[in-house]
Length: 255
Image (cartoon, rainbow, N blue to C red):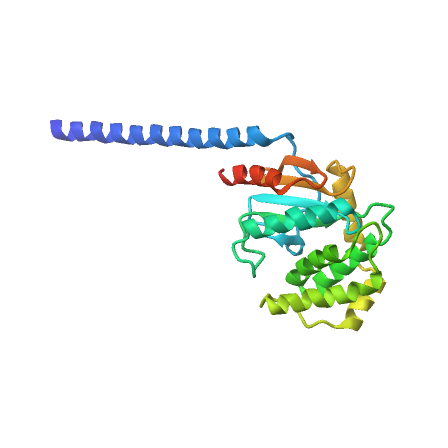
């Protein structure tokens, strides 16, 4: 009987130690998460714009905890700078498979915001959305990068070359063995561009950006997903260097 009693006491002590240890570890993990967020957050608010659709991602997917949301204008010189010198570098750094944009450590979502004095930007944005709908996400990503490489900004792009950019985007996807919905069809694309079917999404992007505090382009939000939604960790205006984004993202990846 004494042996049984001692065994019960020992078992109780072991269980108690386990519970206490788990509580301490869990507390430390929560403290670490809070500490990391406190060290980089400048806003204690949640993003209240439209939920992200699968076809908006230019890297990652909805399961990623960290999302970089970028509002951009194809004819904005600072947007071109950000896309070519920062976003494309982040796409490469945090991608897990360069031929599959969905496999990544973080997500990047691209939304359109055309400044009123860039009257070509809405047509360019609509063309990019046509490419996304007709040929798929990989062609869409290639189209965005190609358009920025071609424009010298401030309404300089000749809109007649939009089909050429679209064809390049589709061919680039095929050359990289990336999935596409169908082969390029010039008449189909031109008809889509001319009918401007994506005005609702374009306006929705504008409303999101304004409610999130946009005053100029490019405008970026670094978001961290918790149980209550997309927490705004940082709001970033302008073409900031890659290292600024990396420092914040790398900290968040430790949570």
